[in-house]
Each structure stands twice: as C-alpha cells, then as structure tokens.
Image (cartoon, rainbow, N blue to C red; front, side, top):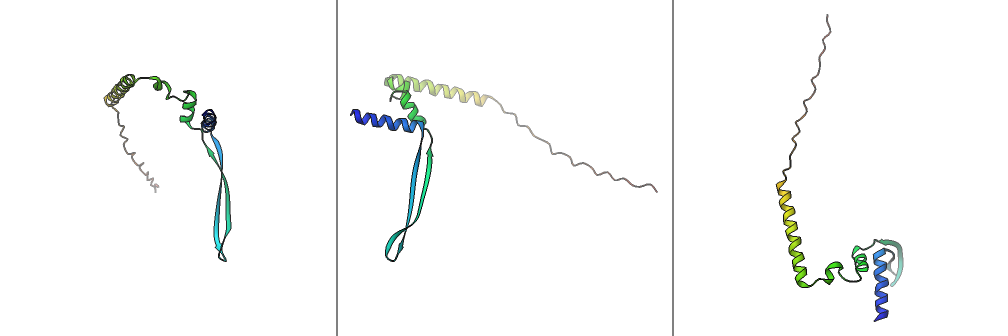
Length: 117
C-alpha cells in the first residue's frame, strides 16, 4: 500500500506541475502484400498544470475545508451559498443599465463656390 501511495503522490505532483508528453504517430501502407512504415511523426505536447491536482496536494488529499464537515454542516453551507447567490441576483436586477443611443452624424454639406463674372 505504501509503495502505491508513493507512486500516486509522484503522479499527482507531475500533473500539478505540468509536464511534456512525447507522442509518436506511425503510418503504414501495404506494399507488395506486406505492411511497411511510410510515415513517422514525432511531436511534443505540453500538458498544463492541473488546478484540481494542486488543490489535492495542498489539501492533503481531502476536499479542502469541506472534507472535514459533517453532512449537516455541508447542508447549512449550501443554503448559505444559495442565499448569497440569490441576493447577488436581486442586486443585479435592481441596477438599471442606461443605453446610450447615438444619433447618426449628419453628412457635411458641400459648398459650391461660384466664380464671379
């Protein structure tokens, strides 16, 4: 169990920090009844750091502060967060947004200058 836990921690750290992945794509074609390699493409892919893995490392494998809560405490926290969201939505609906209507700009008049005779 300890050996597996170490491997899991290593992989979790790798994912949390991000890593490069080498990928080889090979393409074969049938030539004279046998398969022969026609193309080999090597690419390197960058895998970005994963936020969930970082959270697991920092939280000690638990779900952070919520991991230690009882079911009743979680339900209370859920209700509190829902009430906060509803209050935020009410504030948004109460704020009126002004729409600015721009008038079309009048075209400049052409000046006609007549020469005096």
